[in-house]
Length: 154
Image 1 (cartoon, rainbow, N blue to C red):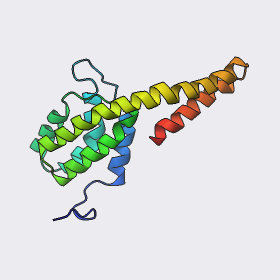
Image 2 (tube, rainbow, N blue to C red):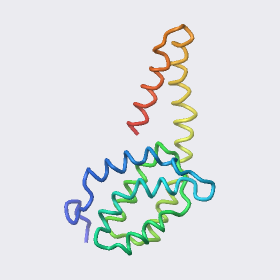
Image 3 (cartoon, rainbow, N blue to C red):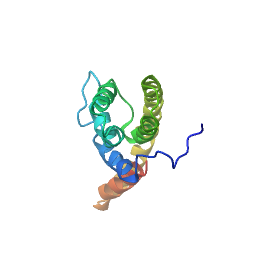
């Protein structure tokens, strides 16, 4: 049976927006054992709570499984969040969810590092610095605005 996007849909825009805002804190509990796992679970929690509303044991199991090692680029975590939330919503196999999460975090981490830290950050910082060197106080503001427009866009 093909999955109908309107049928059995639990997650609303409210949960998705909450997950996106929470993803800004992905690295707030960073540690060298599990990297961003704490922030990952914190970001995914609105979806998990909605999906496992009446199944507390399954919620605890899902949270424990998502507390495994996780590390990706913090700006590109939202696509992974969306895919994993959709898989959780559809009731996919736990190993399939884990496999997709592991398969996505590495490539998006590498792409994000190359595009964001090595391209966008130097370009926006260079634009802001060029104004600041000329004595214009709008230089740092321009940098912050440009960089964060891209960040929030992603």
